[in-house]
Image (cartoon, rainbow, N blue to C red; front, side, top):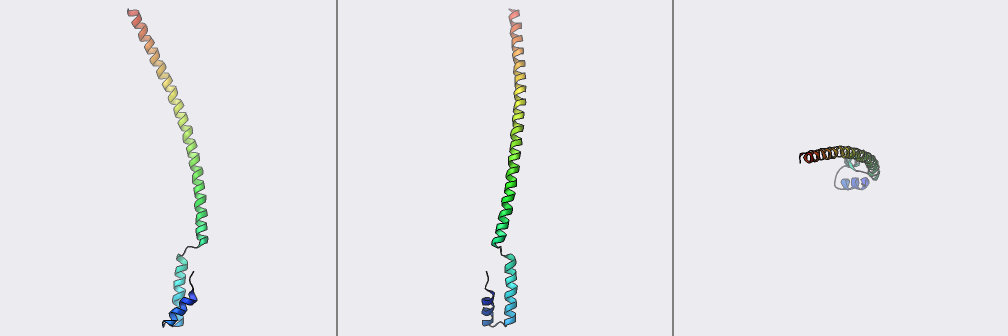
Length: 104
């Protein structure tokens, strides 16, 4: 981190009074300390992110299962509607053939 004693000595050697040098060092050290990320901070952030990613992955899997179920249901409904339409077309075709057969 920061060697505050060495920094303070450096300032006094350059002519700053000792109390003033210590005050400057203390103030700067506090500012640095507030803005520096520690390994513990990083570990905590990593843990939080991993937990959130696991939750999102579980949610995504659940949504994908629901979408697959909905898709299968929609496909079955479409299959039923197509079967009915094809049956209707076949009946209409047989009827037309029957009518054409009677006209000859």
